[in-house]
Image (tube, rainbow, N blue to C red; front, side, top):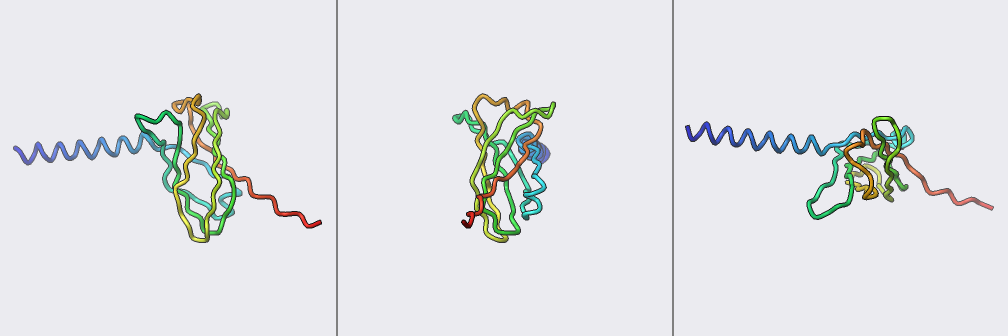
Length: 129
């Protein structure tokens, strides 16, 4: 009986852990230009902390090519309306990967976000005059 109870507690704890992970995951869409530049992602989650009121997400990006730009994450609701925006300067070397965090305004309601769309602003090439 003790073994069965221990097994059930373990299964319950594993279920709670995976449920929390699933609840914290967010939907990400990369712009075609980022995909073409060799950027992809695996996991994207809300960052949460009881003592931190910031609204942030963290995305694990993989870059096949060197990349230096400013990434913009735009939060959209179910009506495809932008409701928040955050930026992060990034620098990847070829065959690189790293977590990138985006911190949104505190007024943004995370519960209404359906998708985060990621775009890039590349440094302007110095014009030769």
